[in-house]
Length: 60
Image (tube, rainbow, N blue to C red; front, side, top):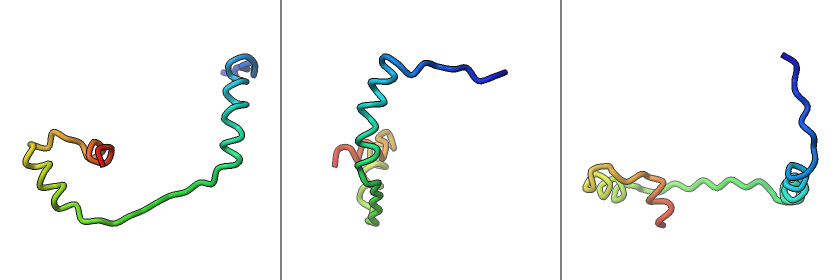
């Protein structure tokens, strides 16, 4: 099976042109933080583990 060519025009081209500057100008940054999650785990258990950790992060 040979690779198919997809024309680089129209919407694809517009999306690429708008995303490219941010990709080349923005610095990739990663942030790592350690914290005690004892109270968070306790609260989650109290709710029956129905709430995701992501939901807690979004709420914060």
